[in-house]
Image 1 (tube, rainbow, N blue to C red):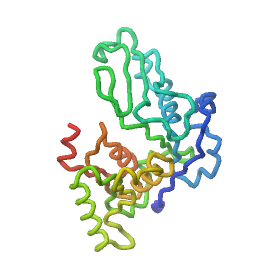
Image 2 (image 1 turned 180 degrees about the horizontal axis):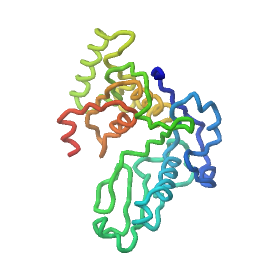
Image 3 (image 1 turned 60 degrees about the vertical axis):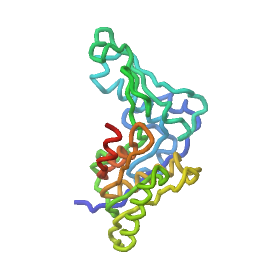
Image 4 (image 1 turned 45 degrees about the horizontal axis):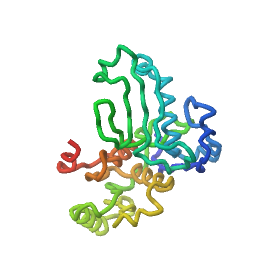
Length: 259
């Protein structure tokens, strides 16, 4: 059995001209000019959400029996599609629209169109998803992210802010104190490298490709992650953590928020 190794996520150069992707639909991976730059050194590659959305749409149309049996048309829906650069597209505006075949409306509550939108209010003909992860495995690996044998050096991690209530700030401080007094070089009890004291701390960092790469690397190197309730329709970090094999820890009060 191969020994566990640290996760390294590769962030390609930003693409400012979306037509580079429009010209060719990939079969197994994104086509990207910088994809030839040392792909073997990385476990995952990060792409902006426009590219991820196009890839998901392509796979939905061509690779699923569900689509061919129930839908006749699928499109991306963006508020603006011009001058898109990496990680600048608002997450709440990204979505997919599927036109339902005649005769299949009864399967979808009578809807003739189904919309999948990020953090959107739920309606009878649309439902929200956290966001497109924009992560995929290079060609030289056939394993899913959660099946890769990562070196887990942290027992528990947290990514988020402290301004959403005093309880969160107090709990973080307690876990940090325990980690500082009991942690060893081989095993950190608690790690919170992205713990924001205010929204201003996020400025220039949140939403950038390097930020997401560091977040995913932290989840991939931790056994558990603490996922308190947030201020969005879904707890997006839950899905990142789960995708990378890091078990989310959720309190009963936080779970009740989303029920």
